[in-house]
Image (cartoon, rainbow, N blue to C red; front, side, top):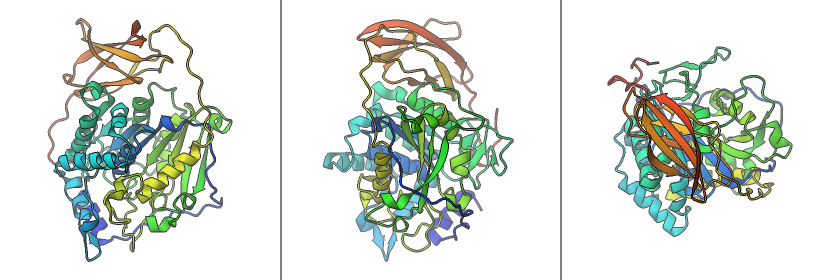
Length: 474
């Protein structure tokens, strides 16, 4: 059976959940507060976690500065409202497991209308905050579960709200031959992970592509190299039920425990940031134990860059709420109302409560001292597709904007954009072609010296009508 059909069938008709992972002796505690500015927070997710990441980042756009969308679709794709209930079953599950996964998804006008209405009513933040978000969207061309048309719609949702001046905030990667998965570089020391192109549990594919690092650097700018050895930070288990009140965790299809990675420097009071990493269906700890927490690459980057990583956990439920594959709620399975895409949505409210707890001891950072514009440090091309390149550099305090100029391999440079933030996705490029970029800082309108980087775009993948069987290119 096609993996996408299998997943849809299991969700609709209640396939049994996998056995729970091994019990752990430590007792979960509440989350501690850290010196982390909530306005520097970010979120990413795969599959149902990607749909939830879009919902959360849109609802709380005032505090979420970036979002990673791996094999997910647009806001309010399932179009669930309270009047969509028939004999206790929600019609949106058919939209979720049908057009939102297999494509083509519902037209985006309904997503825009819902987001606009929720923003106007105050149920979500003002959509002007979405304009400044850094957004990474990914579709692996061997994905046999979520169609490319769904991720196309997610990218178009963000293009609508980013607008032309902020088009460089969106990077869309479609040229990696991954299956339905969070993608990592090869790791010969870890058993049980998939080859590139697989569409199977644990939905972590080894494609020689460090997706966690690319997401984090697209959001935050160039980072220190990840720690590929023994991590100095600590992975902790915490009590999720403390953040679901007045509901119990099970009634929201959330596990009793979640996980948290905290670098040593953050434990010692250093200024840090929080990234929320959302697993997909059948990737919760009950199905794959701690594989999503330990093996997706986020912690290695977090350990050297003062990033706290929050791993909330769903759990499977074959009764009410009906969620046998432990998916995140992106079709209103919890309370059968459209609040699932709003701040008041039970799972969104829970994740926000966790974020509030983690950032409770933030110390305001002093204003940066005035400084002359300098050449941006550590400028690099962190990723390329066939028609795009993703640039990142180290943020320069006091900078009001950055100017991007581009040239062909031997051509003249021409300015293409002025951007805020320390990354830029240059699009509309030619496949398999060499380019150069210059980035300079603007301080109060004065342009400083430039840094330069170069890269060659990838070749376009060969057409393939059967994802999961397409050749995996280099």
